[in-house]
Image (cartoon, rainbow, N blue to C red):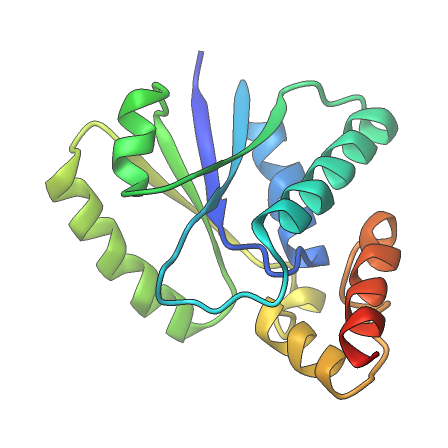
Length: 168
């Protein structure tokens, strides 16, 4: 059984993330969507909120697409250590641009030195999702913009509610 980890901060989850989760579940026997704690990032959404968003999204994927091989969790520490502890064979990374490729390929080399057993699989963003990132979604939210084209329908209310709460 091949297990993959799709790790990220998912702050917030986007339709690009949704696409990578679905395509990963089509490729691997088991996919763990892991929210990694990154001490260098200041998140707009709490860990609990991001877990609820991802679990809601995954439940929708399971119901609509009949995919039962996805689970959601969070973790601290090195991603390769999480992989070792959870018998993960591959790390999934979504790539949108050349910049993503450059950053991600450096991480692959470091991960390989830390845990040579774990491979990395790059999944290219769909052409209509190349410009979508959590950073852009957060910026649109901060400026009272409409993010309905950028986040999955099943989490849109959660995302919009967060910004409404912040503005009060």
